[in-house]
Image (cartoon, rainbow, N blue to C red):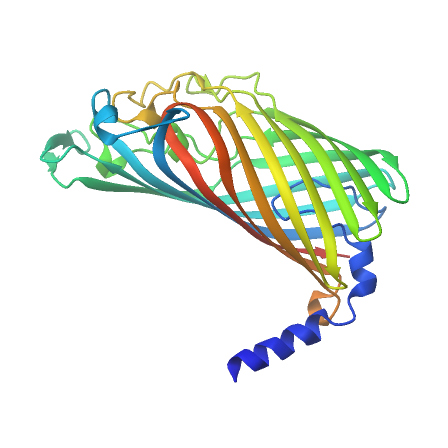
Length: 345
């Protein structure tokens, strides 16, 4: 009975959405920048991303815990990163749009000691305690860096568009999160990947081509992050480059399906935080960041033109890596999931 009611609700929401589907872009929800906005138009979105990481890699080779323990105290086992993204876009002119994005991150990580190992550490410079269990869990949460873009339509034809994007990363996320009860040394901080931000102002250039004909859409996008500055703690993340290609097909008046391929390359961290000790675990070593990765994604978009969600798009996209060549040892990606809703005015 509940299933039937739910099905009838979906039919009510999505029925008669064909006119809106023609106006909406079919871009996958995992693509942050896909188009500009009309003059005077607003768009707001909420997206959720879950990224699961597992297994340690050096290059494309998986490493055992025993290999990691030869050089580090802890061996990473897994990590779950959950990101909540709020985005707003405004069409300043017919060609120029402004976009702002804020992120909230919650990450959980598990690391392991060799069986039978016992470690002593100090809390607040006082009495010592010991770590006897094999698996240890770390978690952090809070606001991450904010990003601002200007998007300019170099070309805006009836079935195609070429959009230039220029953005800035603002270092609003903390890079001072202490290791707390997990600290082995006085004043120790969590590793780089367990901090909330980068600590630097970064530049975010990109260019996107979009083509649409009848029920078929496709897009190619090249986007990068340039990091010329060192943060207050003495390090900076490496530059990165992402190439996306996706195609989508409108199956029904209220639904489209997409397939996306993504290639990603990043440099290792330059410099180091003196309160993050490289011997602790691989992700405490700035050399163990960056590398190359290729992933594939499949997605669905649902166009809504009913109730309070009028002129909205609901999207879901899931992906897995098909190739990883990492500056390791470091955890490799296992899978990614994006869910989001976009509301236009």
